[in-house]
Amino acid sequence: MSKLLFYILIKPISYLPYRILYAISDILFIIIFYIIPYRKKVVINNLINAFPKKSSQEINQLARNFYCHLCDLVVESIKLFSISEAEAIKRFRFLNPELLQKYYDQGKDVILVGGHYNNWELLAVAINNLVPHQCVGIYTPLSNLFFEKKMKLSRSKYGLKMITKREVPSFFAEKHNEPQATIFGADQSPTYSKKVYWTTFLNQDTAVALGTERFSKKYDLPVIYCSINKDKRGFYSSKFALITETPKTTNDGEITQMHTSALEKQIIQKPEFWLWTHKRWKRKR
Image 1 (cartoon, rainbow, N blue to C red):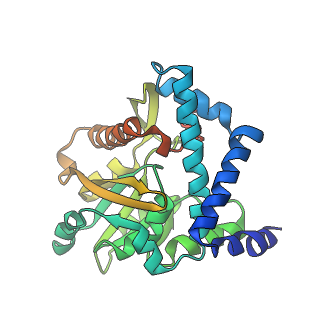
Image 2: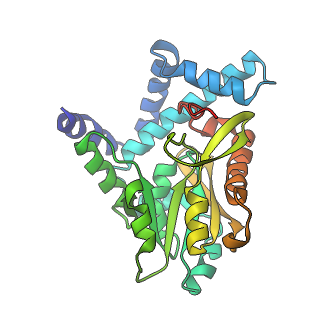
Image 3: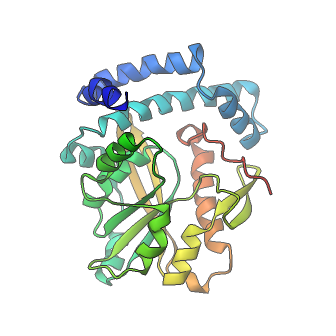
């Protein structure tokens, strides 16, 4: 069934021009927002808790804007199964790659940290051609083995190296032939088995995974926040911001607080571009 779905529906759709894909997105929005709501209770509840001072009308408008973006994200992600290297680079740009160039010239690995904001999937496809380092993405394998293979191939086809969460400790312990930039997505709800840092994020008591801080301190790696902005429909830009280049001198929790605050600032400015369908606050203190 997975193969049929991919080869009969998903892959053919990926070859459609963007104007048709966005027409599909507009139809999909009507379906999942009005007709068969997709996780709408989760989205509304998350927005109410994150923005308690906003009126119900404002919350509903934020939800509507989010679902519009989500549908664009769905069709743009499908497009990645067939997107060319040139097209990916055309639609994603880094505003200050020279920040990474500095560390590359020093032969230094770095850690990039960000969240599920705007089109992180397009970043994964384009990034290795746009920055000097060899980029490495950390991911959680899908339970469906067929789609696991297809997603991994899609994300890594233009140079990104993919490693699972379990492979992270051994990867950092290895010696590499060229400087590496390892990408951490730090805004998902951590499991109860993991040590976390507790903070207030979007007006809520929030557990944040310590992976970024843990490995940056252990291997003395600069930590750089990677923001993603939506310039217009289908086009994105990213900017690097240094969190610290001396992680071992920071206090416990300081790095985690800084990159969490950087993401929070982005979300507050334009809430519709974060992944509100995610049950971010399911872990309680």
